[in-house]
Length: 396
Image (cartoon, rainbow, N blue to C red; front, side):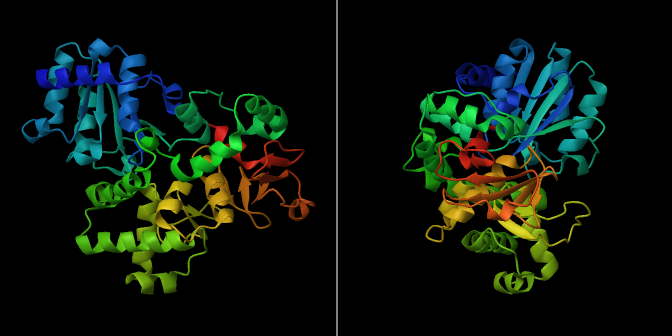
């Protein structure tokens, strides 16, 4: 254990706290068992180390990744027992999905060491409450999204803006946009964010961003998905083929019969594959009514999870209208309820209707609707129920 403590001390000493993800201020650290899910590249490891440095007693904390060679010879439970017996209070576990029987041992640790807090991260693939040992009555779960437009601006320019709630944007978007414009010209930054802003790779090299993102996609499919689903090589290849097929057309209404023929799988297998890609943080499924969705329910519309994935996977098949819709959906996902609408592009919280468009988008389609808005691209300031689409990137 001494080696793990030494490695942790080095890591926590070197981690920067200049930039902190939004989630660090939303976690309820009074809970004894905390789960943080997120796709590869979203910043879970850095978040854990910052939590130890800023929110916990660092001297009584231990961070360890569960793919560490230490666990070739030792069990997680034995580590937790030794750590607790030596006065440890906070055990931070990274990438639990890479450790066999993770849920059983975490349950035992939680039950047998009441003075020990456990904070663990996992791939967004992992269904935490469906593990071998049900943790639903014990764990409080959070999801770490990719960078918001607001967070990207902070990382790229060191200019910090507050988080604005959805209600604040609806009611005061003109005033908020005016305040932001005093510090930056958002449209230029927005174009950059759409291409290389969802993951922090651009900090090291903007030129190598696409290659790093492609590597991340491969690792999600070959390592993260496989660690949870235990798929054979042929199936993993078909998942990649499916992802590229979705990317070349998304957002689109999937024709399950044609898509299954193209990929070479049955209808049910195709729908399961789409749901796997969705859980992995690569694809978004959308429905008009989210209630009653079953395991084999075909999504009514498919999107890539964020616009960066569009640019790296679809390449020349980029439609700016699709980019705008993908951005809008991504910023709302896991923040507010968002569904397809019968009369507009989206409906938020089953109340607010939204059309997404360019600078010249008319309000004709929403003229007779209540609580209806147009989110417009390429405008700095909106008016009335026309709101700059980039402003919805400030909600987290």
